[in-house]
Amino acid sequence: MIAENNPILTEASETLYTYNADEMARQRSQARAEYLAHERAVNNRLAKLSEENAVLVSEKQAIMAVNQALTSENQAMAAEIERLRARLAALENPDASK
Image (cartoon, rainbow, N blue to C red; front, side, top):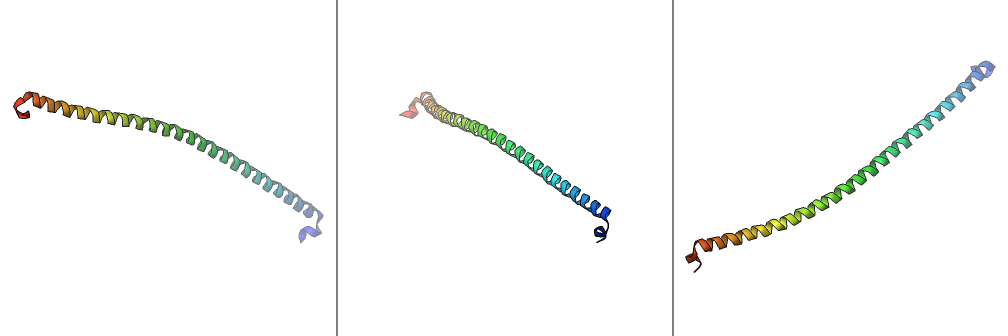
């Protein structure tokens, strides 16, 4: 090679090799740091979403319980309305019940 016969080119070649090796190590280090930062951000977001989901599930269960109670109350009121309508009909038309 040309660099083997010329000490200046040999030194320049070695300097470039060292610089490139340092640059590649720096790039790998930077890529790893960026990856770890991204992973932390993803894990933090996942934890936050899990907490929000737990709150929403709890709220949903409470709403479902209220809905069930209101449905039962509605059914009881509907039955009471039917009973009162039958009684009213009987009072308005006393001969029909005989």
